[in-house]
Length: 121
Image 1 (cartoon, one colour):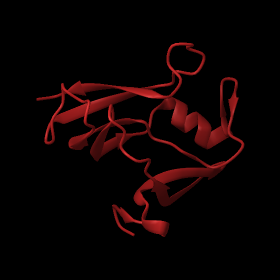
Image 2 (image 1 turned 45 degrees about the vertical axis):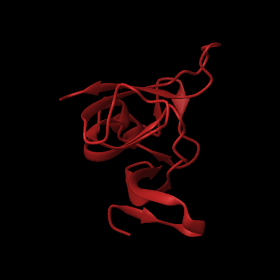
Image 3 (image 1 turned 90 degrees about the horizontal axis):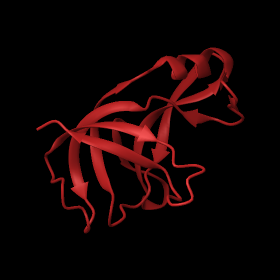
Image 4 (image 1 turned 120 degrees about the horizontal axis):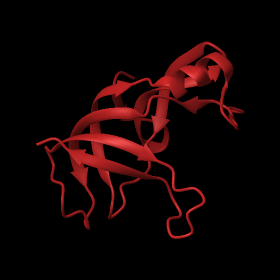
């Protein structure tokens, strides 16, 4: 499939590194969610593998989190904004950005995952 495209049932997809077992990664499609009004779509230019990713790869766990099913690894990334939701005001198509994913789990005011985006322009 290359770097991305249209997958099953017309869903947009990217290729991703899936951790499937100890020391085993597979490059497989990842279904992209639809773009919401507060979301941006970033064309990845670089993705890093950090220490926690290596720990997952070697042990299928990091601290108290145990990998029980295949999961995508590699979360430190940079790219270019290619689409913005209708409510996004601070970023535009073509902006270069670095992302710092954060989990909002346990925060009563935020019910989904978030990413802090740093504009590099």
